[in-house]
Length: 162
Image (cartoon, rainbow, N blue to C red; front, side, top):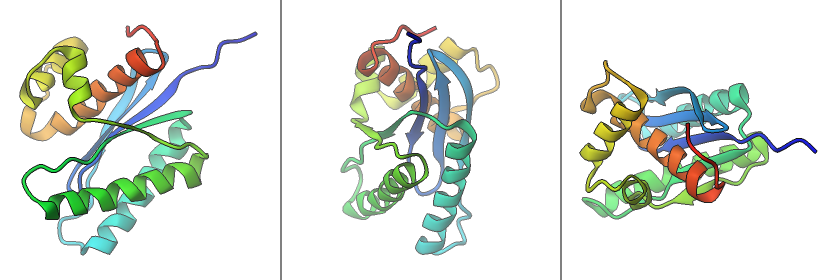
């Protein structure tokens, strides 16, 4: 009997720049960001986000999706906005693929990679993946999604990365 192929989309959701990556059986295949225009109002941003996410999901057809859990950071308003985007992402994954996303704590990848903070996690993923042209301000959403995807593959699916 053939082994089920692990096809994972990992999402580091935000209202400004959602990082995503696609991993197949322990290999990073593709990555990018979804960035709704800042000038849009919230309903239009949510719609744009959903449509762009749907395009990514249809392109790769993952059988697993992992999303970072919202957390109470700087203020309640930010948490509410992130919750809107996460809700749209969960609904979109179910409607588009029939896949219910796994929700992962933002601290889990840091613990998995034994780093203390987001900057250290960025540097770890940049080193592991050989991203010479990545800079923190522009690419940390992507590296967060990659770290989360690797963590999910290693710990939940019990794969072996690389």
